[in-house]
Length: 120
Image (tube, rainbow, N blue to C red; front, side):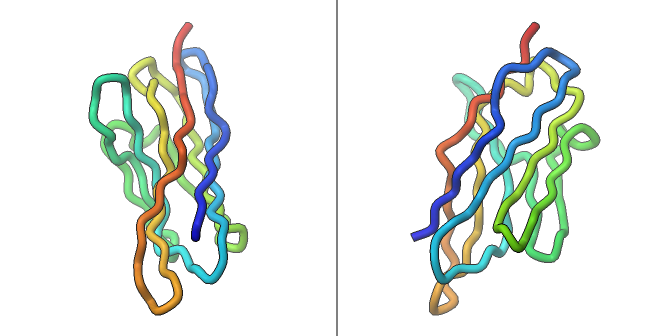
């Protein structure tokens, strides 16, 4: 089994910054890509950013220029640096990973979510 554990959420004022992290742990796996989704109250879960094993990144327009994703491949960890935060960034943030396991099969995993609240 593979487990994703997020950390780093919290309360921040508008214009502030937070850094989220997500660690993938388990046995006999390799990470194909990792990313972040978010879900605001009463809304659907939306994709916001992804990074592949070869460091290619993609961002949703809503966070482009403010959020940066980077990873430590050796530690199977991905980070999300969030700057210039806005109240509309308030949501539960979920880490997501596409994992290759024994036999070459690809699986998708989710973290438990971490709350980010942007408010004065």
